[in-house]
Each structure stands twice: as structure tokens, then as C-alpha cells.
Image (tube, rainbow, N blue to C red):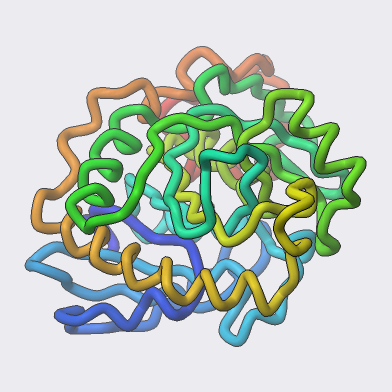
Length: 287
């Protein structure tokens, strides 16, 4: 299983309850960056291997800031995942993206303030390219699976990640709208950037639960509102995941598998051995 996991899903623990999922196993994976949010669960669905990781831990006890994003991505890489579907509950910042809709964003704005967004450092520097932060190949394939699940889908959107855990003020929400943002959430950054450094294909499956707080004719977002819409959306997402594994992701012809090829800038001769060993899973083929 560790060498042929086709793709992994990061999201809530409710995603595991997919009809037809069998041979479920639990993986407790150690990483140089600590423990992942939860044990990774793997199984076979429609004859294809799949892995699930509860981003906020079982029972949702980790805040967006407390999530160990580096350990999560590193562990999935170590398990053998190549494609990651990131399921994100989010708020809409535009009228026509309605609660219950699903968006496949194509751009990302990192507005977080307290998170480590790179595996590198400690004497080892890399500058990975993130002009296109989501894998276009994987995004297109997932979009087809979502559409076949009967969801209303939008295949474009600018996603801003805020620190949280609080929701926005109305001024902040309107400012983000003025900046041209379409969606708002709390977990896509730095997850997407770490996945790129790990040379994994990563896309965001953003399901809208609310209008944040900018929409004056709608009630401001609350936890109760988010949970109610989220539960409805999860059923559609489960169908989409089942659709996807029936037609597994194509060969990775995108740039993601080679993201570090021209990104490593440190002279190999001066990279500390400790840093080299710590990142060997990511960089061994280059140095």
C-alpha cells in the first residue's frame, strides 16, 4: 500500500464513511516535523487505493492554526500518495457562488500570519514556483467527477486563506471582496504550498457553506450554519470521490512531480547533514 496509493483526501473524518470502501487500515506515520493531525486511514474503493487524513484530528480538536500542515503533507508523501484532494468548507464572497455550490479554485492568496509555509530552512534554501498553486490536471479531473455527482460547480475562483479561528469582521469581508477574492477559508494555506514542495499534485475542492458576513440580506456566518450546509455537501463529495476512483487520475504529465528541479538554490557542499537527512524524502533525487 505504501508504494501505490493513487490519491489522498484531506478533510473531515465524515468522509471515511463511503459505501464500498474496504480493507481499511490505520497508519501511524512518524515525520521529522512531528505527528500528523491523525492516523492516516487507507482502503480500497472501486478497486483503487485511497487514503484519508482528518485535517483537524478525529473529533475536530485542532484549530486551523494548530494543524501540523508539514507533518500531514510529509506523511502522505511517505505513504506514497501522488494526488491530493483537499476538501475545504468555505465562505462565498460573491453573489453567484451560493451556499451548497462547489468551487474548484485556480488561485490562492495567503493571508495567514502564524504558520510555517515551507519544509526548507536550517541551512537549506529552496524557492519553489507557485504561480499556479493548484494542479490544473487534477483539478480538471475532479471537476468532472463533481459534475457527474450532480453538484452545481464553478471551475474558477480566487481563494483567500485567513488565520482564524474567528470569522471575519464585515469590514474585512468587504475588503477581501474589493481585492477580487471569491472564496474565504482557513486551511488551504500553507497546505497547497507544502504539497508543491513535496512534488505532489494538489487541488482544492471548496464547498460553500455560507456568505461569510458581507451579505446584508443573509445572516452572518455561524458554526450552526456551517455544519448544516457542510453535512449536505459531504454527501455530494463522497459521490464525487467514488466517481473519481472509477476513472483514476491520469499519468502525472503536469509540472508538479518536478517542482523542486530548479528550486534548490543552496550549494550542496554546504548544506548541513541534519537538514539534508531531514528532507531526504523530498530532495534525494536531486542531491
